[in-house]
Length: 119
Image 1 (spheres, rainbow, N blue to C red):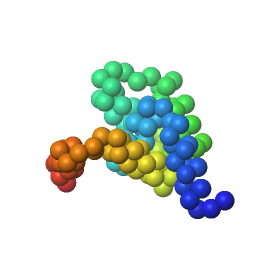
Image 2: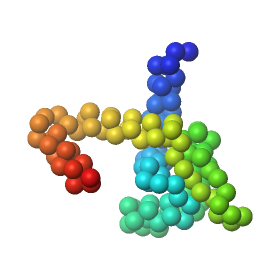
Image 3: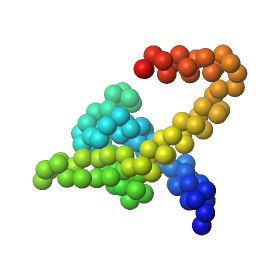
Image 4: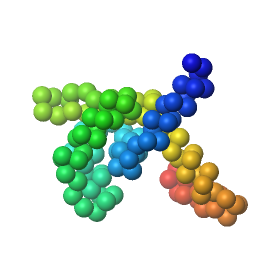
């Protein structure tokens, strides 16, 4: 298998993620976090409670797909960190979204303004 096929295969896995799973990856792109911090970020985004029964199976799936790495902080707390493959999945999603959204100079300027406001 060529390197290009490997990249396409990895991107294909990420493209099959649910929106919830993609949001977890975006949250972890900021910094490694423990489960409760991820839960709080998701609740802030969705404006509603996120059940443990929804969060942790999705985190486990992302770990199984090697998009997220899980490590033990202490006996009761796990930390989750975006892997390089997970990082690439977030970039792939952003690239696809931008390719659909930026259709003219005005929209390009809107995106540039958003980015500059974050820097």
